[in-house]
Image (cartoon, rainbow, N blue to C red; front, side, top):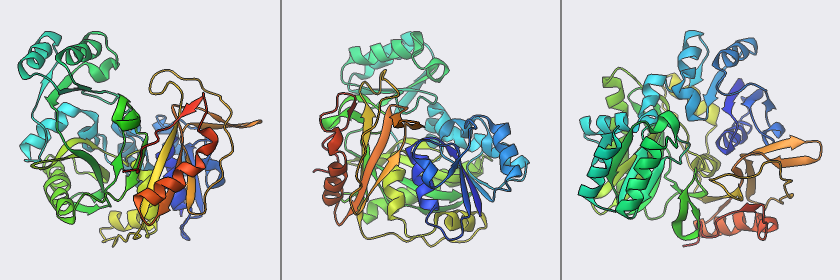
Length: 415
């Protein structure tokens, strides 16, 4: 099989690493890829949003399967284009991907199909939004309606913070069109976890749960990011909770999207809060989570390409998982998620025996690898427990312990 992976981040590198294990895979292409993918994939200089060129490339190279990592090309209709051209793709249509592309759509959808989530209201006028915040009080959550790379969420601890977030999004246009509408919702209390599933129309095959860490700094402080690290599985999430989440969240969502005539094929991601009254949906994504993918795929026993082909052909992939834990710690550029420098030389990192390095924002130069993004790489490892896996991951990041150019959280998987 010839496979095309669309994207340039850590999630895509992790997908490439998993595909490279397959005996059935002849060639992997990554478009555009990053500095770390070249060992297992041929990086192609086509931007992930250049959908026409990607389709031409896929036809020219007789691609047997395309996997799309990031959300933007999904909303722009990459799967629709590939279907028109008869190119096999494991990804949702733009209509189905709206479950991630619009938070107001997702909230209305969840209400309609009785999927547990936080109480909410949607606003386009700043004055009305502020009045609602004063009426409800804090803590309260303000979300930009559209895509904002995981950064369009403010958990306001005071009414003033909430009002400032509304001003930033609706008046200051911090997130441009993505913030032209805001969703304001109750602040759910509990522990977060993520549950992803391979989905094709009404069929849902759940993965193991993971826990992402969104805040930039230790003890869940600092601004929201795209994710500073993760571990899987999640010891405090019971089998009963997973069964409930699969049936009441993922299956209901898949069935609802079929009912709405926007059937979903691809990876459906539910970001959840384990509250006192059970799990509730914080958000849906229409693709593999990042950095959850980096700690889930190393625990999958199956051939990833075969899993996707089976699902597209209507067969049960019979998912099997290793009886281990996996932890990943993100190394980020100083200043992230705000402004940061690119082109900073990277130290060589020695992988531990059960460890691995996933590249996210890196670029190859004549002098070696340099940083090329906010999240630079992820040090991951497997172990008998989450804590053991975390210890091995942290050992690999020791060269960066006192770096002024980069930082990482020191508390992931440590409890």
